Length: 67
Image (cartoon, rainbow, N blue to C red; front, side, top):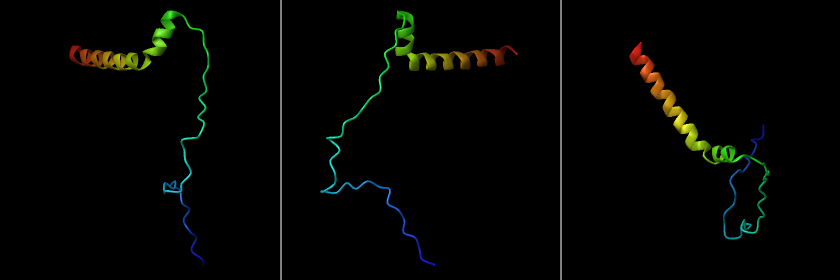
């Protein structure tokens, strides 16, 4: 039985490697009309998620101490 050769999955980065500086990057952008409040929420989503997690943990601790 012939041993199969392993495929190379690492990009070549030698001196004569193809340049990646000339590659055109395409970003998909959707325009959405939001109210001022919804836009603020959209921009601060990560911060609000951390605040909600902290509040839920604090509430769980308070409930454990009360019971």
